[in-house]
Length: 401
Image (cartoon, rainbow, N blue to C red; front, side, top):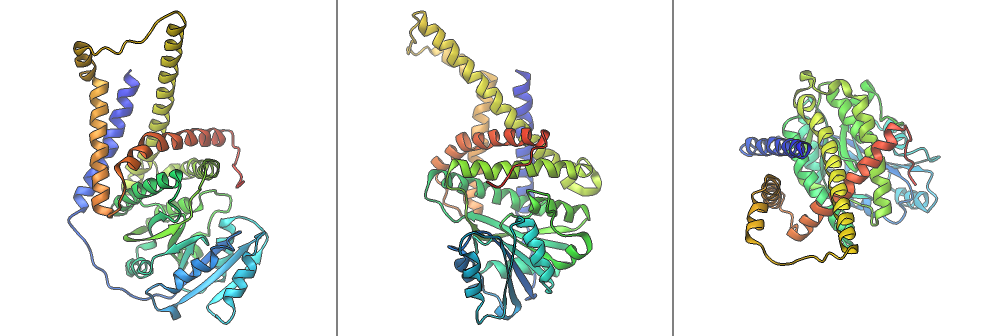
């Protein structure tokens, strides 16, 4: 079908674009001088009593002048012991402030905390996330460039025991590689769990959008719509808690996907606009096309498989029995089929990306986990995108539970 070839062509074009970005940026590495800015961590906290102390401990262990770090914890109407834990941790520590309010969501809690902060930099960190000891120093360094309004980093799953968590580990690693490339062409989205911002940006251009389910993506598009840049830390990371079952994953991705389409609509003026460089002319359109193509491919593949199953069941009912004899002529014809050749080429491309990621990010991803993720998990995410799009066109905003 012509549609299949169009889908494959677009996917290949996007893949080769990013590979060309990788090759062109491999050569240079710019060293910048570290300057210890004063910064405030803003932690929106909702039912994180079990892990909040570990989160604060990871900040305490940061290789960074502790006298320049302040922490604001905003209890967002927790129903567990989060507030009690936060108050206990703030005792005898003047650098930690604790505020409590009714449950109004993450974006509103971030805004509440940012308005209390006075430092030049604001670090937003999910209360169930941890930072590596060297991350803070590396994330603050790019702010010596005045055009940088935010710095984000790689994310890794904190929990990696179950199969669904392992697949998210592969997904987050792929996302880390992608984000690294986006950082080189000023088209980077902010990370949901950890990002550092200049406080001045909020004062001049507004706070997080409280009606937005992906406030981190929205603020990154807003930063870039004002012709500022976002930098990326590739050689350190934050750890974040990921869904440990399919239902939790579905609820999370439903929110993310609805928010993605919401922001595409909100910033539609950036699409194909050369004033916004690679972000407007290629990255945002390519991102939307990738979602569309993967979702369309999944629907087509599901339809083909369903038809094949129904046809073979009907044959079996009238007495047909499958033959397992090897036919060399039929095999030769099948492997020269353009669709088979494209599939083999896609497989080769996937292997290339796999070994690039293993080499560049030093991640010990098993090839089995990689292909399970690519062949099962990504199709599941495509289904979630389709559902998210249906929610979006029906203007039905997903809830958190």
